[in-house]
Image (cartoon, rainbow, N blue to C red):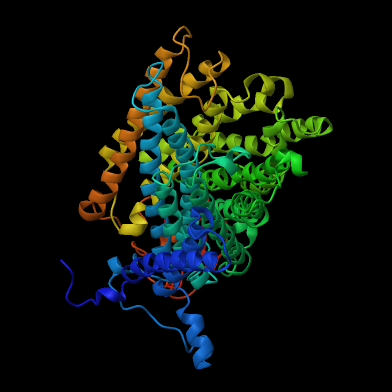
Length: 622
């Protein structure tokens, strides 16, 4: 029942959705009229719906209130601080409105990511179930290709959104800031994402797309209308990512608390800095490649048509020049999470703090020089193969620094195997398998043998789950008390960890054998005489466990937010700054900026202090 004290129209999403839908219809009508006026057929779904979609997104953002501040400032001639307004909405309504608090925005990001995660793993299970037997099981080849493609791009978008959510909620608190440097830009970055999610969901009923998440032409130029919706959705996610990178970099370099030098910053800060550099530097390349595909579809430009002077390999260079560094956009925040959790639950300083921090920049730099190993079998320039092979192998060095430091931190530590630590330590094991199975992919002859087989799928999922999904689960259990003031259910958390870990390995370990024995990726069927069915059935059982585990964590989040045990300000006895304020964190984070005097990893060192708080006290015990 609606709270009678709240004007429902004051909730931004209530205004924005109908305004956006009405503007879509108006934009479609206007496009039809203009086409008829110039003598073209009125209805052409590609360009007409492109105009309608862009019109709808603009109207949605206006009705949401995304531009109110700037319009008020321009029209009224007020200084920015005079035009500032504070929301009087209750907390729950703020999550559905254009709110400026980074903690609200962080939760908005994370809830959106979890919804997309549940959707994506469900699609993945349908794919696995189809492959339990040769021939048709539950769907035809066209639907399988559409679901496979949507699963891939949905999960990539989900991880990008989850990365932004973690950085939004945690980074200002960890660095001793009251908020992000550009709070309106921060809110604007989030509210680009609901239309992106809607476009992704709508792509399937709009005919889907069968290119996989890589959108290679010429197939992407010929794909149904769902392809266009997907491209526009990725544009919105990419724009959000670039704007977020600007904000996070500004925060790291200009928003740290007094005394917090770069080498007193939490490792998550180093990871966020490296991630933001990648977001700002490389995201425009996928934007350019997708724009070229869209222009081919809408107006017939021939960027990738060889008979007209185009080059399909050009697309792959542009696409992978972003999409391999994007892997590190995913895994660097995950590495940062692991680096925060392991010292707390081992009660030891992180081993080699400076090396761990700098290795994030090393991964970002090295990871930007390896894109073409995705193209060894694509007809790329032969002279480029050997340099790319060398850089691909070398990028493992800074990654190895982190793994060595984590294991050394745990060595002889007073380890507490609570749920966050279970997920963090499992993430290391999973990522190690992903990393070790990735080394052959950087070696030209080995890569040519396994290209486009299930070996690649197994490697990629170990990298993504070990680099981000398992760390994300660890982060949810670890920082949930800071978000809600309550613990998540520990017993249910352990069950979730056991089912997810079992489900993951059962699903993806068989992929290596399947790939080495010839099962191609992105295929709908296989020969009944091939020895693939048994392991496909095993993998499908694992996928069912994985889906179950993600619904379990959703249930745990919802029930714990309502009935969970109360948590104090610092239930884990951690030293980073977010744990030195109340739980949930207050709106302004800190009454006055804390004064940082050392790194936040002095566990086991008597008298070690990371920061002096405004009350004159220091953070938790050893």
